[in-house]
Length: 382
Image (cartoon, rainbow, N blue to C red; front, side, top):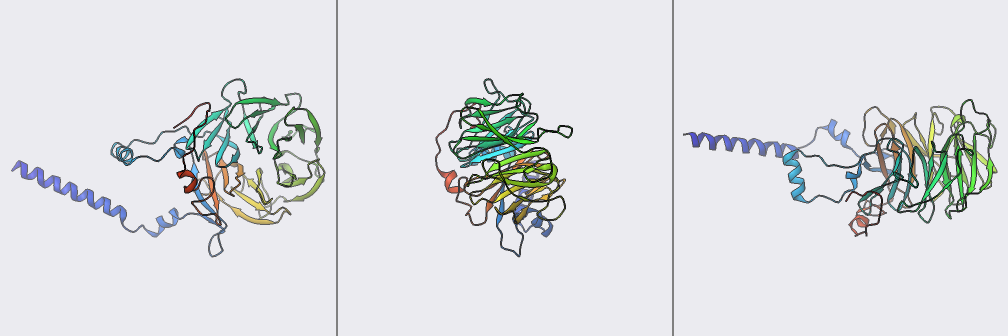
């Protein structure tokens, strides 16, 4: 009798488990479907131009795919995937799917080599130890330039994280925040934020990238063309033009490579094409300009002439795809994918151009299926 009861109980348990599994395959309520919809920009009925693809929170997000046995073990035990997470991401730089994230709370640059499924850090040890990494940029050779706002200098590393040299020192900067380099690695443009009570150091200082010699400066405090109020970030366009986020004046200014003012776009306001708290800046291969606005919780895309093309993302107190509380850095890879950091949600969101197939580009399935040789680094996560 006892055996029959046990068998009956076991059968009921199996039936219940099967029902739960099948229930998971049933239709999802409309409200949940809406929550799980992949964001596209602009939304329907317009033709999409960018599609949210994925988010990175930790090194676990780029690990090789688990085997079926590993997945079963985690499901059975409730074990969570482990990884080194982002703490306070700020600046971003990307080249061919290798993403560099300046993490000011971790005092290091976190490197997500997505094609190689590899993670490592830069700047944790001397020489080249970082204190407060903010702005990042790369040249065509893959050299990484990092603004250390506390050390008040720019640290230069090769693509494997080896420290090469530093540019500037505390006598040259007041509050350095952003950095841009031309593609050939000849010039480095360092944005000095200045301060509310500081009158002079609202400018861009230009150095020889190889020797560290100071070449010239442009900008001073003011509201006219070529003048700044709390400049934040900079980027160099393919034609050599230099764009600078003029934060306190709520605009972006365009310069020739010698610092001559060319044009201005943006103004304070709540409408598209206007700014409330502009921060990170990037330029794509076509010369389009991407500007993060922390207060709006989005980034706006402008043509080289300053015409608004598209706004992506929205402000939210709840994390989710394309939702931001404190967005900061932005970078655009050569395949057109856009990477956006949010300090509050401690993540980087990735967007794919709608014209680019999911399999294509540097982190598409075709690229990730290829075997990429491992490279040396400071600390790695397999």
